[in-house]
Length: 340
Image (cartoon, rainbow, N blue to C red; front, side):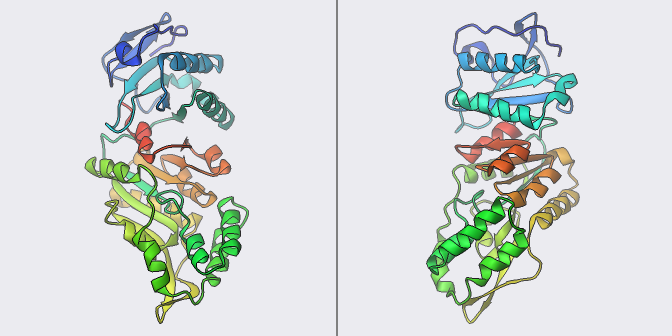
């Protein structure tokens, strides 16, 4: 696909202008339906999604891309899940790929945000048309809480523990050190006290249908968490997970001892888990996805074909390949189901 001028779209609803899941080539500032799709291993795919996607907003975003020297040569209107609104993906030829910097990604996110939309910029995106791997953080990613903070709340040491948690997630403190510091404050807590927390873990919006959809498409799903097996194992069945890897709290006489057993699941261990599963499943790197919100997810995300920040800390959003900054995690499918 070769670009030839900024396309001008008629002032009609997008559903009247484009056939779903079909690619349109831009040539001489016009767009026309073509057979096939761009090569997923070449060029840049830029998604634009959200409840308020309109033709006028798409035109505005296309102009921003053109002004950023990212001329779009292909468009595809697509609908990856019945519970999501339709989205648009734009293709930029491979000769412009080197222009996609962290700064430009930030500017594109801001441009989309100004339109009350979200965007993601992907090179060689994964696809649900083939088996894949999704490795997820747990706390504040798959579930809405940080379990250790909630245990601390029950033990009346919340402020002390939450402060250390925040430092660790922001990358200001080595995760392993922070974990031992925090867990030591939980000594003596009765298991019965935290059983109610385990029984009612608040799932992040959209995570359950996301996992169900990926399982239907033969994806392997796992949690790699700096949290605790006590909680991660409770998610195996409801999320149809194939495995979970987390830290094991030492328990004696039905009480927490304030210690963690075995090797700590830290940032490096998370990355190692992703590599191990990729090798076991014999997957191409492009079909591997890591998802998290904190600094200790960055190594895992960098090791994956696509690293996605979900409601992430600023540092994580900046370094991730893509980010879901608000709304349902089902929106991850906008990144995994691009028609190619």
